[in-house]
Image (cartoon, rainbow, N blue to C red; front, top):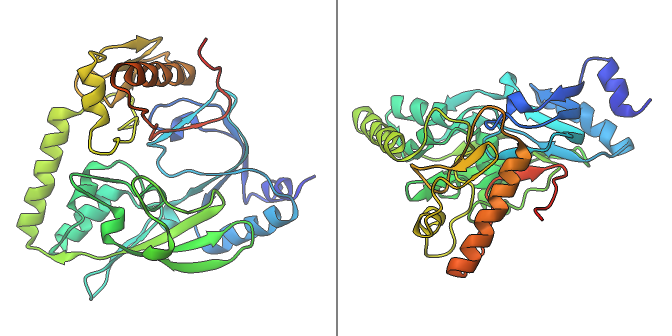
Length: 303
């Protein structure tokens, strides 16, 4: 019996947990091992097991940029749980948020305290841990602009470090965090802003997103990163690709960088549609689009 099997027998980790319900596309097979982490002590126990018997590790937040193959993930999936979901305002105007906290909850909590700057988070369905890992952003700003630092546990060594924003290597939709680095909390700065003004900004962001993005559908937000000086959605739209479909997944008619799935769609459908759109944009515009969504597991390459 492996060290992780021992932890599973003791109820610290679970086995064969379906991942589809934990992603916004609702695709994917099971995780061989699954940790819903509620405190640092629990994470450190798992780190000890991994030090003895390493397995691949996948960090999961709210699953808003993850596409899992039907075979699932043959390793350990780590997801921050409710115990790491707190949001606290400090007297100096900074916000300390657990990795499991949703970005909209951070935006609303800050606004209610008369603090601004984080209103953009109201439109991002991901977690704070995911915000740090992917340097998420929209409406002209991103995590890097507001992040002070993050508390990170290395699941290989068990080291717990408070890392400054400069030590995280944040760039456009990128950080230098390793697959085995787990964000447990983040500290963000804010600016003074009247509550009514901050709430008005959030209402406008919400209105804009409802008008321009396909709400009420199975999607993962932006499929591709924006290329330098352009927008992926504009490029896709300019080539007449709205409505392009592979199986049960189609390019949204409302926003060309959103791919929406219908009931019965598969992760392979999405993989094939992403490949086809990349091919057409390369041939039609000479631009190599880079996926923002992450594909996990094995997929068949399009013929």
